[in-house]
Image (cartoon, rainbow, N blue to C red; front, top):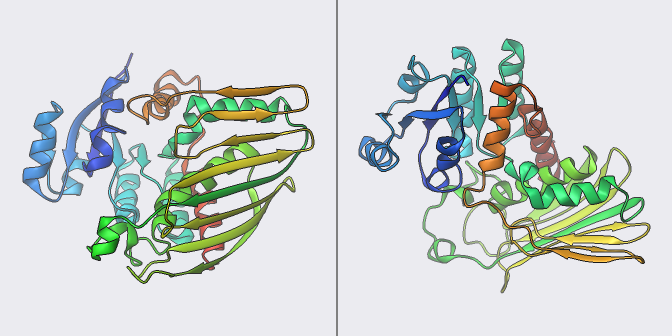
Length: 324
């Protein structure tokens, strides 16, 4: 099998367990270089993960002849600048979610890769996880009849950084206008498009209830999918407890699951009641990464999370935030 050599732009916490080892464990992939603006931290990551080359300059990594493809794992406000350089270099790319903080910038990235016919993937890895594929199979097998509505409630208390008003890019309105919504709700909205089809329209109300940071901390939304399934959700980042519950209502039953918590998935119909525990892999992006390998090298698979699908999610988020 041919080997695709990857370079990482950004080697922070997400690459330690969630994603980085998945690239190294996938046959046909190899990680040959990493980049971080702090050279000492880049060196530390490279040595701990047995990677030969490290940089503190992104262009050096992108133009490294020993790098065939690039994974961008930096905060979302930097995705566009890095991605356009990767597209210019003609190399396949995977970008952490959300694609960018805005639909406009996400569109610029998608068009750049589309124009050059270069593969672009986005790390909405829930589309590849077995527990959500099982939910999708229940829906496709019409286990709950005709799908009518989906609702998601997600709440969490403020963390120490929030309460201390310590800088956090996830709540910096210049980096993530929706605050934790950008980082967390994007996963669920993208998953719902995968499970139920693309959105036709969406709207929302956004506010800042706690005034701990300048981004939004409370968002509520309603939407409709192109197949006329309706949806609603609320996200609150100042509650007294963690809540993560999704319910899909059909004409003959319902399905319940969590987007983030590894709770059992649950199916209820007049004929059956089923509860399944399907654990995530240790490196949660493993199936997502293997899917990229299967499309790029084996050419026997169409990856479910691409620049095009992530662009649609960016559009939905901007609609909810009132930016479109």
